[in-house]
View 1 (spheres, rainbow, N blue to C red):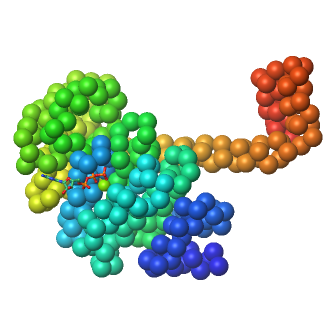
View 2: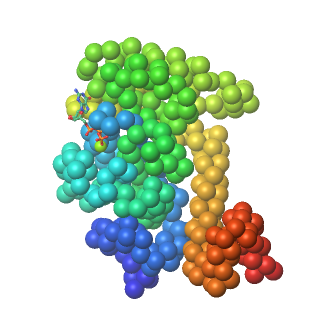
View 3: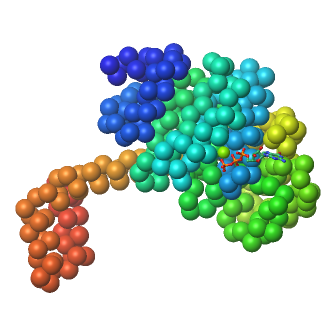
Length: 325
Ligand SMILES: Nc1nc2c(ncn2[C@@H]2O[C@H](COP(=O)(O)OP(=O)(O)OP(=O)(O)O)[C@@H](O)[C@H]2O)c(=O)[nH]1
Ligand SMILES: [Mg+2]
């Protein structure tokens, strides 16, 4: 069964891929084995994160990116992640409609994902779906997520190139945001450039990026630093999208030449191991420790003030470590 699924995913069978993604979303334990078998076939796709506030035109832009990559003969996988939606409805339906011209193209796979559980769960599911699409042979994988800040799925952890999409109206908001968000992006896009104040917004962004520079001195000396560009697009007409793809390709080249791509891989592996360790520990603690009489007795003793929770936690940790030795 698992072998068959793995085989079909590697062949790029769209129905199997769709079914597997549903299993991943449901947190089906069967998928762990499948993902780990697919793992050695991953690592070839270029993963592009597209993020930014609601309504700036991310989905429209993704639609045009798909078209541009298809022109280049590349296959594309798209995951639209909406952490605010518990089901794959609402906005996501809009995404489907927006990208519908590609729905008959076998070289394109589009999937929406909402949060059925925790943000952490969605993040993990997204990272596994990326692996599935990667193993299935998609050359480019685009992940669209809403928002910049805490509510966002941690796109930076798994994308090679992150596009932060904004729009002209946001000039002042951008200035207010100040901290952090320029670090998220590799390429900044002012979409809706047909609207007023696009150039002003580009300028504000450029000033911010300039001010945020100067930390990676060594890379700069070696001529290996990536100068974060700010581009203008009109996603409804596709204007500027060709240049955007060229810039993404340049960023990809930069990642390879500067060996940053290896660092990203390492960082992602590290995050994955740690996530996985935590998940396994949590599982073990809830299933094997919290159910024991030893633990329940300790809870009672805490309740009557015989011991405090922190020392009880120490005991739990000691017990886990002892078991290993
Ligand atoms: N004038 C103008 N309108 C645009 C442009 N790009 C997108 N829009 C419109 O902006 C609206 C939102 O576009 P979406 O692509 O759904 O935006 P989004 O960022 O994906 O939105 P969420 O996924 O809900 O966060 C739609 O009505 C688009 O037609 C543009 O370049 N110019
Ligand atoms: Mg969208």
